[in-house]
Amino acid sequence: MPVTSKYQDKNVEQILSDVVNVLEKHKASTDLSLMVVGNIATNLINNNLPAAQRKIIAEKFAQALVSSIDTE
Image (tube, rainbow, N blue to C red; front, side, top):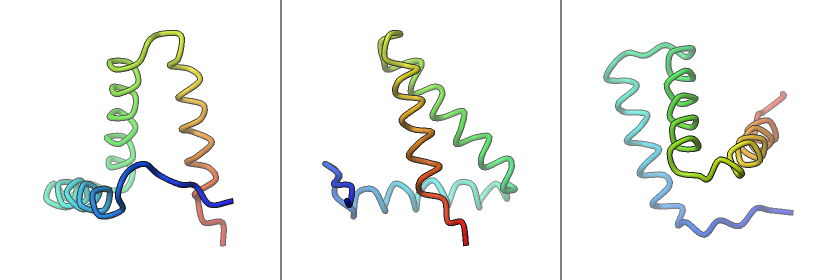
């Protein structure tokens, strides 16, 4: 079943493009880029969610990440 987002694709794609441009500007390697993105996710979870929800949201985020990975 496809996932429906409450956000417009155009908005998501523009933000993604901006983030990628910043990483490219800094010539960030893949591992550095992943570390930065992971730190952003951690900061968002820790600073914007109630403590009781953090682990649940982090687990859902991790599951979504794993399910979106191309394995071929």
